[in-house]
Length: 483
Image (cartoon, one colour):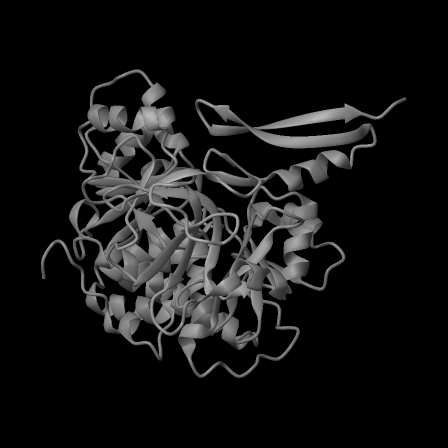
């Protein structure tokens, strides 16, 4: 086995069977004593967790214990369970336990307002809402008036399921694994249905990479502060580590002043980032120990072009810029991991990258392919008989939006790219009315709708403005209502 290629476990390779839990069980047999989750000392103290992490074997024990509790309470296929766990290991334990019994997990943003939380619980048809004990008041306010049952994550017993479970699907790879909500350009956030096959696509992509981003089997320790209600932490980060026998270093949030110290403490070998993170780290005064770390690469997106080369020179670690959407998962991810990386030019790699076979087009507003080097909307699909293989399964309760995004058999990303002479893709702009603030997608229409509810507002328009730290910032132009 070379350092440039990691063998994907047979459980993940077989097309007809396989869940994320099945991959955990297979990896616990191969790497029982390897760390799977690692907590820095500061995070242990913050969350009052008296241990530095969990091995693969210990994680499987935790998951099996929880799965038995859910099963005994009557939960099974056809049920969805909302999880409000912040970034804690408990999120992964409950998600994997639910996956073991074919229940779909619905991650919850801890910053949701009561109205946003009520929408998610109602729209997702979640029958159970598992929350941290410290989030009881928030959970109760958001679930008020709904049929969903609430329980603290440390409760001794689970409330019984309110409806019987269904028969599980014959093909476990197509079963619902998670339902993740993502901002759209109109109306409320859309719920992306994600199957086991979708999550296996992340591991298939990561384990196929070579060069700077190659994963060494059983050796990688990935540091990420990204939230568990987004697909990066659950998909790209976790599935990459799980499939390669590596460890996920869990951080409650991004702490710039202790970033390099935590990297040394946890023996991190790589990290995931959003564009605002390099900007903040560069803004700190230079200090000893900035290059005294074992980080081989950082992978993310949105680093400011002026910061890219400066960051790499100062801290001694390459930033591998990439692109992905919740809808594409690992089936459609791009990353400038091999030379030429075109540092500072918003290069996101090549469509002929290793991983799940992918086809790509750049089209104009009329739907026809643009001329060479001209900008156009990025369209993607899987190669082979099924263009949606390992992509998301669709938008919950919104078949029209699903068919629209897949118009003509291609997934329309809404992002404008151009192709360079060597085939590399360069990000140009977003076609959607989305504001990208500190790596977060913010739908302008949602902000307009919230501001428009104020009785003193007659009209409002929300647009993006450039921000040197956050990439873009939200600007609201308000016309007050006449007194």
